[in-house]
Image 1 (tube, rainbow, N blue to C red):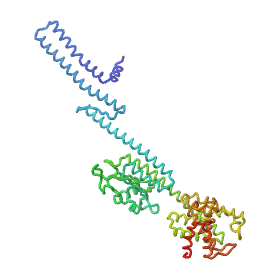
Image 2 (image 1 turned 135 degrees about the vertical axis):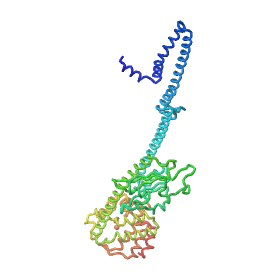
Image 3 (image 1 turned 60 degrees about the horizontal axis):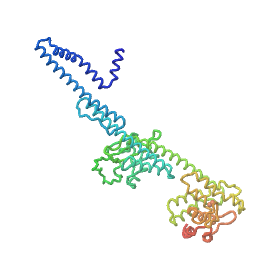
Image 4 (image 1 turned 120 degrees about the horizontal axis):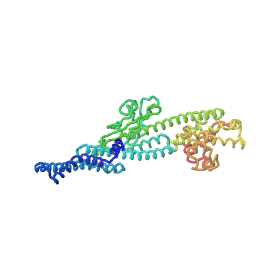
Length: 488
Ligand SMILES: [Fe+2]
Ligand SMILES: [Fe+2]
């Protein structure tokens, strides 16, 4: 066996074995001395004085060997016990720590190892918490995305759940005004005074949040950038019992290198405030928010263009027929007044306003021969004409924000007794907006000239409406209209 191989075997040996090997090697010479002394004592050939001295050397050598063996054991034992405990920790038992009270290098090594283990344990706990947090957030955001509400609802849910998930008290999403890129306004918030939040604005570059919007860098610090509008249960003071300072985390909302807003969370219920993991999580969420906002703006643009196009279409249809000139505008005025007199809510009023302009847009799909016929329609022509409500609904339906308008357009020729078209709905089955529009539509048709008859007087038209109560019209709508019609 070569010397190199032997040395390699020594290097691979366990530490106890190594120490015993060193001990035996270093004990060889004293052992030789002991044996020669013993020999001289047993077979004395030397003078008594020399034998006495040898006896003393013997005792001393034996003592020194015992002392060096004990010392080696003392050095080796803590190393062995540390190695055993470290093995358990490496196997995942993080509750274990290395035990040593020694002040030497071995003690320092053990204490360093304990510190590293504690840090590691904390990191693992934080990672576990982050993992749960992300799962919880993803779940809530996914369900919000599947909800029928628009992007505003989604953003509110994201802000609310982010605040909860990061164990903060409040949060806000401020968007840069797309018109001038100079002002930040709160779009969604949680834990803030709603009234104040609605009117709260900041200049880009103003205050901490304004700085984030200008510089595009996150800030994690102590303080309260929106202190004036935070609803604070603790009366504006930090929770002294836990000795928590007010703290916040603000991240920019960036889309295609353009800063579109700032997402801020405030007052984390933890001694050290927001962590770097929180910052990473919030930044990731801000990226998703930026995409959602951009998509929503694109959709809004597309919808606006589409609505403008179909409104132009409706105007074009009306322009084709000189008898219906100004019809949808007048219907809009009558229907809105009826809705106000009946005390309908703002949503219904908006549907009626938008729907009045578009209610006959489906006539674009009706042949000119039928649409512009100078005289009463035949039965077949009437059937063709009836399709305009269904065609109108199909034209409007793709616009998400006009779903209720599409419904109203489909049913604006239904009759209260179920004798109308296209679905033969009756009574309250007909949307209230369509019942209102029906009265306004018929009143305008009666009070304007038609190819086959002259316009009826207001009084005659009113009587016709009253006659139609319960059959063609909803009594509540007609009664509300006849009360106000003379003032129009
Ligand atoms: Fe119509
Ligand atoms: Fe009409």
